[in-house]
Length: 295
Ligand SMILES: [Mg+2]
Image 1 (cartoon, rainbow, N blue to C red):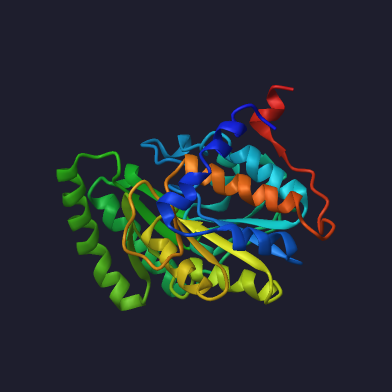
Image 2: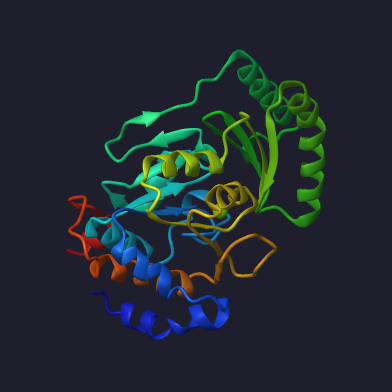
């Protein structure tokens, strides 16, 4: 086990004292479960926000722990993100990568590299083109992110006054398009996006739950407003965990302050896998790219 891991374990009491929630029954159940799934948002949950989005690497220790959890062979690890799936694969640094649902569940990238992409109908295609043309007309293209079935504008790195102006400009142009076409328009932590309707992180969670047995141990970890759909989908079926420096109003069982409490949670998950009563279901061969470089 890496040297820093023992320090993390010494802080394990934080989970109980801060969250007022005893996770031991959950992890005991996890050790006995025939199936388990660890569902994870990426930005703000596994990584701190970074002004340069392509530099938002995971918290130190997260890739190692996720790699070990995957290799323990008991847990299906799935990342569910608003980003295009391949961006998260590059940042996560785990090879072979876990299953990743991108663009809020519109895109599904499987560990074998097979990628399911959304079908863009004519209405969605035109709506996104119109939304794109609008921000282009205001010289905001450098803030845009084009993703499968969606378009986002990021304002996190701008001063508060500019954020307000851009929010107003984008909303003015996008709202009529969204109302006319039923495209979804939603703010997230650091920007706003338009995307195809009828798919969100909750749909991704429901699909995964349908692929698992009803007795499977499942948890979803997320930080943002866009994770609320996932939390709702998991109600009564699994553990809902808010990962965020400050708590906010949300229907979850546990609140973890990253990175220390997140690492404790993942350590406890790994320990539960290693204490599992049943043999592994999968043959794990994942490698943490950063750790491999040091070999
Ligand atoms: Mg997030």
